[in-house]
Image (cartoon, rainbow, N blue to C red; front, top):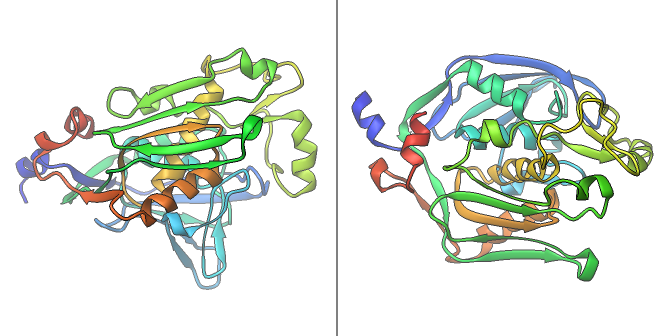
Length: 314
């Protein structure tokens, strides 16, 4: 296949070279090394636990998600990798289809609490076009999931859309959060993931930290990798990176959760107070609902959603 033909098609992407990082797990507090490697077309994103006597590979998929308490955890044959959503979000934002993730522990390092470090790693490794058509999941019918009612209501839904955009509305009833933007819409084609979303950090409330640590969670969290909020204000000395950093982080998380489906999506995602569990429930409902989606590719990039060919060429 000639380079000219590849430019005319929307093709899969991987990285050009191997690159590594070291950090601690947000919840485990353990040091972990992660190495990103190029992968062949149609491999998908595969996490490999190389610290085990016999390494175990975990293929990302909606069905591989086995725990959604404060993070997305994927598992296979009893082996797990936790907190995959920030790396998966970076892959979604940069259009990475195929990647091998070697990790020597059971939690992806939190790094600075956003996905910007993973964006930097992927861009530093270089993004390589492959000679195989990119496969999209195109949503054909509305799909919605919800939990609770009244003040406890939360929901998430997919609607048909010729592109990929996400709209998220948060509601934490906290003075510091309420002072920021409560709703944000991000369009993958019209906006810049690296500029507009990737730097948004995870956040927590001081009143919840003691409870989480008593349950073996947030052991690696701190002011260098999370926004921490007391009863009245953000206590990080540098403040917020975006005026609406809280809701942007929820979009960052959602992009990572949804990319676990194994293919880029063509849909409008809308959510109110959703989280990892509801996002995975939405994916599973989509896949189980007959006629709700189709797999599509674009041999001629001109037939792809407007702007997609230019974005993929960037």
